[in-house]
Length: 229
Image 1 (cartoon, helix red, strand yellow):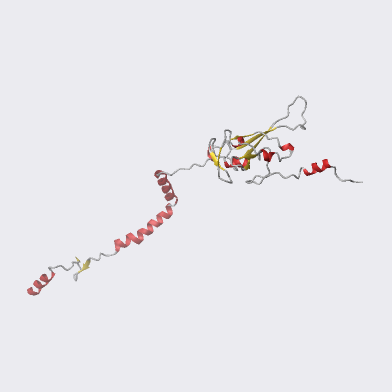
Image 2 (cartoon, one colour):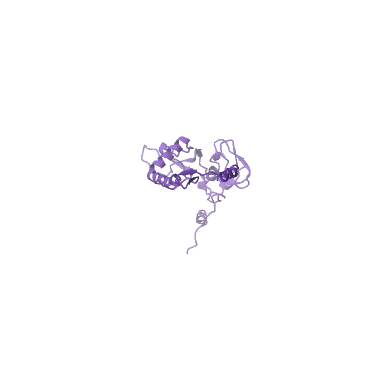
């Protein structure tokens, strides 16, 4: 007769289903490495990775606001990994997660050395290798060996460079500039040259005489002409 699993087996089956508290920022379950629960002075708890991303450009001895209550939290010496863990949350971990691992901050990365497991089989006379595990806090970090040609220089162009660019543009469009100048010459300059002067009049004898405008002496001159006739 099958009496079902023993009490010890029931405990083992329930252990994987035990719920682990989550970080209120990334909604990921806490662990003992990069998602270590850190307790702030305002009694709010967040994981190590989220707080490290928030305080990536905050220097030591400066403060940052709590993501929930906006209370100012000082950054300890050594950065965010040196904040105290929330042991009330750690005690809710499974037994194999309750040993907190050493994590440190290196620039824009969180670093942790993974120790070889006891089940790792190595040949005689050789030590088990250690593995360095890092988490990039910047989503698109720039490589450290960036060449100079990959950098984008931002500068204000000088007047000399502006003139050079304008001259180069005119030289590349020299044919269009020539036809535009020729069109302007035909439409503006040539009519001015060939249109007769409005002040020049032609006398009955065919001679040109400069036209005069009436002045105050004009009536007296016409009177003298009539008397002579």
